[in-house]
Image 1 (spheres, helix red, strand yellow):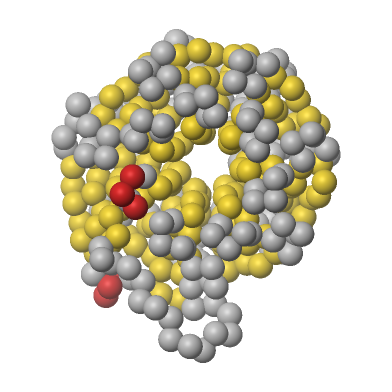
Image 2 (cartoon, rainbow, N blue to C red; image 1 turned 60 degrees about the vertical axis):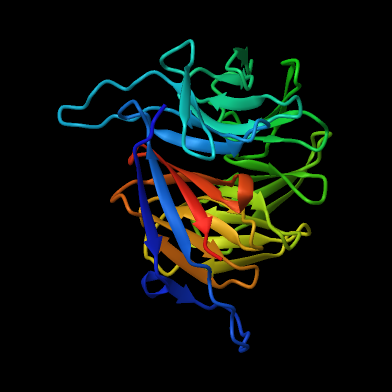
Length: 336
């Protein structure tokens, strides 16, 4: 159990507000937020992926980081669990080199995660029992993972393919033309949508397997990274190198919104409880918020150089995020 925490209440005077588009009507004021941080028990844990579990707790991956001078050994990979009040439990994976990356709540009330270092997909029950399944896709290095509309789990990797794994562990691979897909999500149209960082595209495929579209990002080398479904029925994604937030409709129309902080490297993104999208700024050390019409607000984090990773919605309308280099879990409360 870990009780170390730091709480900051950010006044509106510290926020950066930028409007995009031609809307001249007064925009509603962005919310004030309270950011609370919870330190992880082990140093250099490298928390990254995060999701709300079926038990009402937040579950996250610990892939480990090299830090210090000289660098300390990278710790074993773990799956962490934090309650809404900040109590932390950790479960060590069988192999030290597993490097768990993304995590999602599965249709079977378990948590599923990718093991980037061991070419496996892992499953952990809410009580901590771990099962691992080889992808059987050579050199796939699984990355993103999501629950599909077909009751299966879908994952991406570096083998020019998207993988599907059933709750019983059966893996099927579907080739992706000329691209190594990154993050993946289930779209509002019943398709799977994924980012193609190297190809600078957003991909779309049906649960039956065929790729039904690849859409080029307008910004050259924008490097789309994480993608999620927004409250407006479109897909929203971060552009790590383009320093923008992108929006793509189910028919492939793309709109981009520039982030005020230069070179902030937007990372994770999720639909918030307030009708906006919330995203992390890995190098900017901030949490960003963008409304469906493109108005961006940024909130600085209390811990310097924390490198926020993924972000998700938790119980009671709070948002939670990982701090990969800060070795903490962050919680955002929207002040009313």
